Amino acid sequence: MLEPPRVNPPELLPVTLLTGFLGSGKTTVLNHLLRHLPLTAVVMNEFGEIGLDHQLLEESRGPLALLSGGCVCCQIQGTLAPTLKNLYMARSSGKLPPYERIIIETTGIADPAPILDTLLNERWLAARHKLDGVVTTVDAVFGAQQLEAHYEAARQVAVADRLLLSKTDLATPEQIDALQIRLAELNPGAPIYPVLNGEIEPAKVTHLGLFNPRDKHPDVVKWLAHQRYKPAARSPLGGKGRVEPAAMHDARIQSFSLTFDEPLEWHAVLSALEMLQAFRPQNVLRMKALVNVIGKSNPLVLHGVQHILYPPAELPEWPDADRRSRFVFITADLEAEFVAKLLADFTRQLQ
Image (cartoon, rainbow, N blue to C red; front, side, top):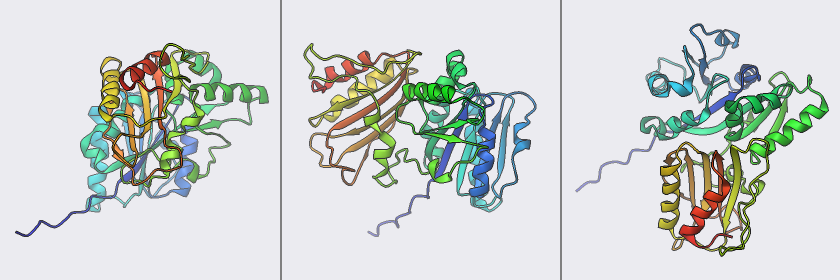
């Protein structure tokens, strides 16, 4: 019997989520990127019945889709997913230019977690798109007080892969230093880049390595960046370990890492993570891991957003000489002690 011909999967279109609090310079950054990445489709979310921000965009060779009348994180199923599908179908049929990537600019009060959930979990979208990373703009002058006063601003920072510090020419050196310390507390793994007039090298905010099975494995090291996070525990399980979550002003958001020296039993890891996401789904903003599994010579890469744990992908080889399992958690209203103990109870090998 003849085997059916193999059909190559479509090339995944990279999607960048551009977020940041009100007035932090997202559209200015977007305009700069469009000058260097002209074949970019833009999905812009504006809060209110009449949208104005899209009128500030410069001309681009890529299409523009406007989501107005509400916050995209609150109307995901009704607008964002169908919009991306319509763009893709029009691109495939030739009705739109063959854009090479998508940038989604959210309103300043959007919670990014539901957006990430949709991009990663909606099957039709995930089969044709890949989340390239989350880029968050922060106002150097007002950012500190916005982080204290608005929980949305803190969540935007916490889930970012890159942080862009805008308006540094208007802030004092003391303001900038204090804000950078605060940002590093909320998200140790995200590099911070000062930007003036929205100018940033596209290479610094694209190809960020949010893992997809079709990506090349060296990106995993950049994406995980576990060494930048404070360890949640430092000694073997048995009563002497001490949890050390990152100290910060806003204790609602914690960022920390866990490592395991010995290979782990896969079902134990999976059970622990599934239990965590079943009982505390809204508290896990992001989870990333590189896992050394018993019986496998190559590592598994995991990532999750809130209640979704995405299927593991096996790398063709280890990205570096470190063979430890490494987990990074960014959580909201969830103590590091709870997560560390849960994984320790299931694996019994926490280091």
